[in-house]
Image (cartoon, rainbow, N blue to C red; front, side, top):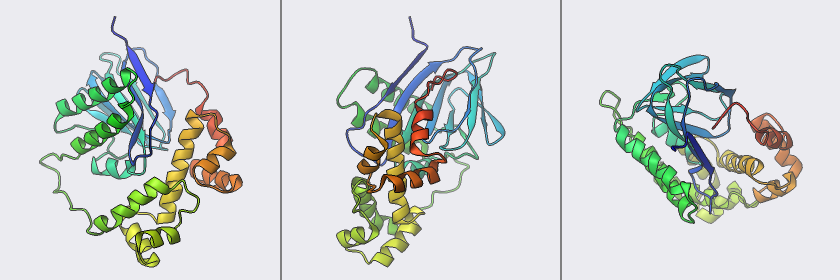
Length: 287
């Protein structure tokens, strides 16, 4: 008998700029309850295999049907449900990472236009299918392969329709700053990773580094490090039994108190409450 729903958590073997941590498939019934309204801290992307449904985001309703994708951005309240006459069947991926926001922007995924009709839907469906297949059975290479497939998926979504504007070439400074981004991605959990230490390590003038980093990435190096640390902390709170103090230390904070202040500033609740909410069983949703 064909299963109606499947999902699995992934464990990352290392830190990546873009990482999928939940993959799923569901064939919805006409009477399936609405999922939400809720806001998650990760990016979520669904591909509709058949049928259709309704997505509500920022007070607006959108219809998504076969061969379309719908996107749920982080920290924005959304809800969605299948149509009663032709309930949808979809695959989905939940992901995070330092490159997630940039990748979604390049793939034309945004809260203002959350439903996307891809140029090559068969390619998208196949990549989604490979993501699921890699993780249905235990496989030590599944996580690394999943990262590669997610990058492939985002690259496929960058293909523009003929009526869209020409692609804007990336800033020239991107080549200069990419080694710095790679260095931060690999070392942000080190409490000694600061603007000064990065500039010294990467042979940049500190002021020049701060300026071109902000111009290229959109935020300061300090803010970028904080975002990485807090995103990693939120994942640990959801998927581990570490104490708040241990998590603070693991992600690069010397002071648990300062970590809690930074965490509450970003997520609106202290780490302990966030963990309690995240680990409360959801009775009305499947993904």
